[in-house]
Length: 83
Image (cartoon, rainbow, N blue to C red; front, side, top):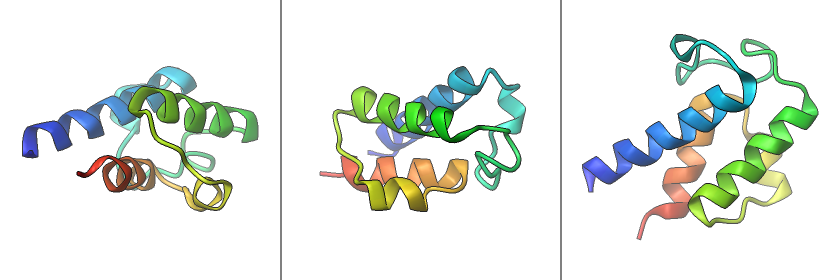
């Protein structure tokens, strides 16, 4: 289970890195997707959609609006994919 958790976190982080075209070293858990990584509203929405597609999960608007950091994205993925 630990391996699949690490894999899910890595895949979620890779989506953020790819969508924003940033240096992977900047995608630390504490980094704010908007303030630190420079995403705009459209990019955040695209990240949410890509995460939903990649992990076959649904993220409500309320949850999506509460996602601030890279770590928040990973937390949402983990909580939605745990069996």
